[in-house]
Image 1: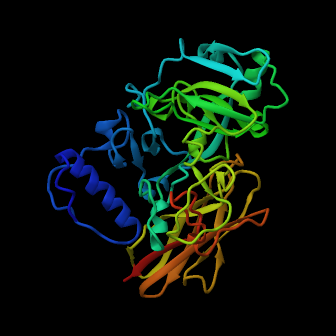
Image 2: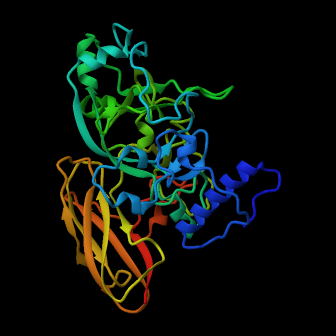
Length: 410
């Protein structure tokens, strides 16, 4: 595998690193054609674990190797993946950003628009939510089994289980006596993220009713002041929604009648309302697609990894399962023989409905190459498609096909 000749040495290393991640996710192994040491995630973002895989350096896009997610229920901050579409110049650190002096605007369909200093939030009652944080492009590379999609070639590590703490949106509105006009149906959150020339700050819209019920203006993550790289000092967080909707570096909340038409809301971060054939061209509009809001039910094998070589005898497979938090995960089923037979895994039920469920299952596999499958089903009867490619879309969003891991038993 060779990088394009016009790239700089550092860009060649990044290209080869990203390509290797994509190939590894599909079971293809690649050997770099150079011997220079790689720049690590710790070199690019202060405090991050050097074992994170780099997709891009700036804005930072780092993936967590799936095996590193298996050890703890709450993912340590150094191991949490990073996905920034744009990034402030001073945000490349796990250190906290300064809260005092950070302004947040409350505007649009309200009777009393205003702005406030975010330092006020520190004096309001806080709540904490344990929840899955997942990029809507997580597992994108698995679509490559049908037709390769656009976007970062995520494997399975664009996810984490974290604890956000902050002030509920409803409490913030009460504190400032904000009166929302009845025609407002959506909340649009904008981030102050130093866009490139000609571009705008990142923003997303979510249903106002759900925001008033679930959303937090988050100030802390895993008990620490919200790191700058993860959106500090203030991030809008809505449990059960894909990570792209948790707008970082929050600067404005607008109460509006319709969804934003910003490029980050449409055509990006949307999937077709009706299935399309893999490879088919598709341009998303507000009418023909839906935004990446509520997370689909999903099950992921964390250990052993794809293409692992196992010793004869029993092997414990472990992983996580989660959904949008609207119903409990009822069961995880694991198949040792590519779907011919299934057995129930042992589930660890978390206290929070939005957190992931850890599971494990002991399987005795025959010698040779085997394919182990895993899938989750929740109490609403929602499950995963046997072939995730039925939800193929050009941007590779929201993969949730049945998990399929090939291993070799010696």
